[in-house]
Image (cartoon, rainbow, N blue to C red; front, side, top):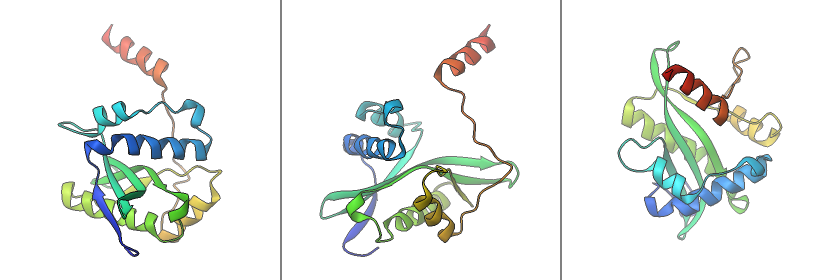
Length: 165
């Protein structure tokens, strides 16, 4: 890291700032209308026993410059634990300083030491060529046979309800 930047684990008191950065990312990607994360949902799901995700915060001079939100992953093909980076956000004024790379490196260290992660996965929006170039420069590559799919809230509830019947 350079320029007085530090990377630290998020604290529960960061929930508002995390939700704000996630909202900026959603707007940047054109997902703003669908965005519904709040400081409360960040607190509920990101902290305490059974937290669904972790967050690393990058800051300089007490000001947040970026964040990486991640969680455990497992590959049956690899037979190994990994880490999935769901969201990586760098404030516009902090871009071009390798802060995204620093955050990914820190996530890899945390996951490697914490649960033996041996790989890192993420998804990049096809219409975000700057991000695609960034990830490819770091050595990421696409799996052409994999197509991410989502079962949305209504269909998820229907599926869960059908199983209970």
